[in-house]
Image 1 (cartoon, rainbow, N blue to C red):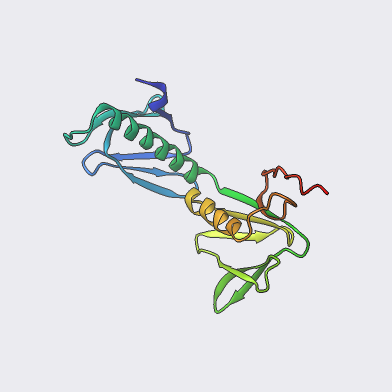
Image 2 (cartoon, rainbow, N blue to C red):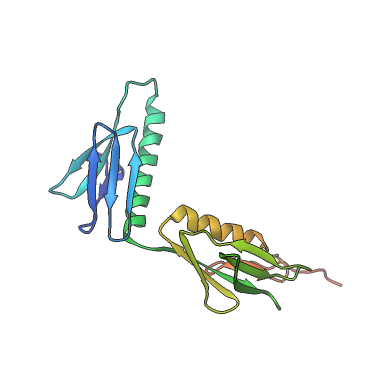
Length: 187
């Protein structure tokens, strides 16, 4: 038993494992998530742990290296499911630049986010139903939801509208991001 393939389960999360259907289900305070597995699991109820074994459900011609990588991926997915069922995932974006703004708009029963980013036109982003987005100020944006994939993908799409440029540092940045500014031309 390797420590990296062992997952400790918190007390507020219920684990249901169906060996016949090869599905693990996690029931947490916020959400219920399921995952179809390709490797066997050992569940120890006394220790509140789940161990991902290196034994596949079907006999396959995968070599040892592929099974190890599949084992690591399964461990990472189960840990991500634990996080998603017990906590809200969030991302903060800030906008740097004179006249750059975020605005919430509702049109045709759609929730939209309008951006003024120094272009000749405004940009719009349709907010997905499973995410919540609000402005702390007109220059700070807070994105949160239950799915890490959806939150990070939405944040990266919004950031791609105006990536920070290296000379003045203007653009859309993650809250903890620091931009190393390049030196301009010398005269």
